Length: 529
Image (tube, rainbow, N blue to C red):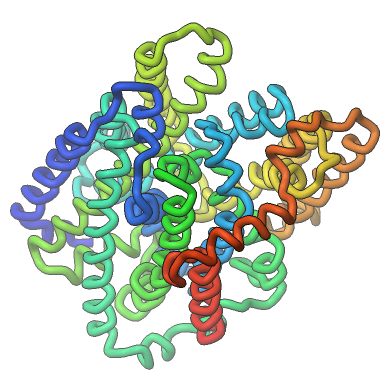
């Protein structure tokens, strides 16, 4: 790549934008109490909630990963994106009301309400590992990948440390309120820049027919055969929803944004709005990666597809603006993860151990935790280079973490006999099975089970953990009445809600909006099946 195309004006724009984002985040700091610092005062309206959810997901990590995977394996990677809309509808109907009404800060705290402290501590620990190894480290890696192309003479370590500093600069003092407000600006910029890049790329390749001419037919289809190495149809049916449910409905990193909503309606509208924003990702983040096969057929590293398009197709000035947006989105995603992780440490460990701490002291604990976490993530980041691609790294790790967690949330919500022992032992067993599978992949890759697609392994792990959950629950004492009454689904919730919704216009009725979102999703999937 000819990085000399990076004009001085691009560097100036990148610098000014990144510094501006730090000051903008500090301006919106809100840290007078622990609720302000960790949940932005629970005062966010639906557009902010929705855009924040979308921005936290579509960071530089996902943008680079989507384009790279589309370049190497085709548009089937979009299955993760449209499935998010379906998952968010399910989340809005069944889980979100319980989360908001309970007033919890964290998802592990919710598990303690439904089960006991053992599940809370275990899930907190696993989530912290995931936050460091997945979101934060992957975000740092994506940002360093971009800057390494621009500044090849600068060491990767120095780049990672600078990115970590930029991400922590407003997260540590400002909390989630600062994170959410910067995410909105970055999402708008990233969307606009990606749309421009898609249009220019489409023009350069000479139309869709030229893309078809150099792309195998199966690479431009969402529904793939059972032996497909990317997203087999069986994996789409059983694996993708499982991972999606963990990411959108159980993951502290994402759910924390919805917990900032001022009320249930704004939380639901925001979640559905995020689902709507996920649908056009096919056109301005996935398809450019496929179109790049026409212009750059011999790229050695698929993860460099997006920056390659930016540097080679965009004019000076616009390059700097989009690169600044990419780096800022990376920074925003990392900041959100850090704030999420520090919330877990503060609320699930420190506050439980020392309940007498003041609100100001809890904020200080969160700030110190953020510093430690960002250093750990920066230390781990170089290890990601050992995996095939950034997206594959994310998929494999999440595929092993997600199933046991989804088991305890799903069964706990819809089965009243599920109890603390069932949850705890299924979580522990899931961890043991996952660790065994990962070990076998490394030491005995020739075994049949080691060669299973991770979208097939995840459902198998889900079934194993479900069997353990049910069996242990049936031979253990029943849960307390308050654990059932307050944290399990019952039909009366739906009927009571129907009466309340009847007074709202259709465009404020989340059920109507959910149906419209599902119809639009089905239309897109059908046309690219």
